[in-house]
Image: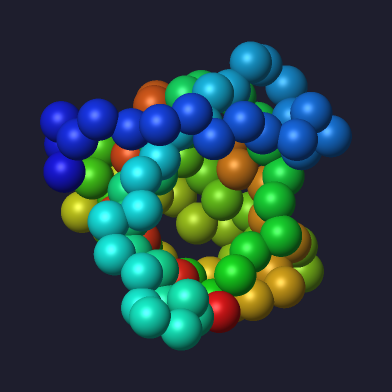
Amino acid sequence: MADADLEPEPLDPEQIVSGEPVVTGKVLWESPDGKQIRGIWQITPGVVTDTEANELFVVVSGRATIEVEGGSVLEVGPGDACILREGDRTRWTVHETLRKAYHISL
């Protein structure tokens, strides 16, 4: 996973708070009904906002601070596992290019 080739996933410019973060990713598996997705996602340093899906992820490399609106502040780095809930509004401050392996349930 650390060296998988990833494809561009352009950010909506309204999500970018600061910096010039670039997002890439790759879907590795999707259930036949499209409700379960597993893959790899990467973002370069910067600050972005997002509205989350139901997701479990493990950080492969890099570091970030994830602020959940009205909730927790998560400091994540290699080996950390996190769960985000559908509808969570988040602010990601990416300190070092972050790569994660994820499982999303739609």
